[in-house]
Length: 276
Ligand SMILES: Nc1nc2c(ncn2[C@@H]2O[C@H](COP(=O)(O)OP(=O)(O)OP(=O)(O)O)[C@@H](O)[C@H]2O)c(=O)[nH]1
Image (cartoon, rainbow, N blue to C red; front, top):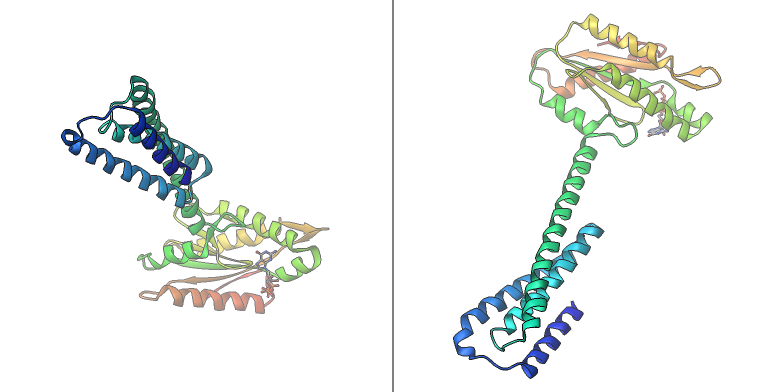
């Protein structure tokens, strides 16, 4: 900013001292318009310096605006003095045109950067970082907005997960969570939702369906868990609580019943499902 202002001052002083003067009174409107243009572009340049753009976008926008400002400075001065041909051509027209083009390219890069950032944030808002399945926020928001009457909720909890962490380390725990989430997620179709809602706790939503279909599905999850190997022939097991919504029941109440059913599954020996 300092270098830019210095340039404007030095170039203005040089032009005023070396080039012949015009009849300024006749050019007062042109001069005023050009000065306003210069102030606006310098203000935009200043805003760009204060904002946090991506490196490349920042580089292009700043360079473009700088060249543009050099061009506009010459534009302002040619309302006061008569510049030589090379100043009009190279300093004014060429700098301004190239500056505008580079700025436009920089803005295009900025838009791409914003779009990428938006997509990333939108994904982070609904996806679980570790397992890449839907997260708790997404699950709760989705099911709370469901108006269909008899949907079914599942809460799935990996048994004795703490001991996996304790015996084989946290990295192994993470690996198991990822593998389990990936495999179970593949069982869910477009009409149902699967999500990680806590540490080793997952949830499933099914649209109105026969409860026997849901228990069959739960049995498949129990069997799938037996294929996930921790180490040395040790496989995981899971417990599942199932609750089907009763008419007018609130989402939190259905979740609570599914949670109580899960508690019962744990209490009665784990590695099983219990229907509320
Ligand atoms: N590796 C890993 N561990 C996690 C993560 N989130 C939670 N945990 C662990 O999961 C364990 C859950 O332990 P508990 O709530 O006692 O449950 P549990 O050992 O599975 O016992 P039961 O549920 O009663 O069968 C804790 O040790 C947490 O540290 C995670 O993202 N990665």
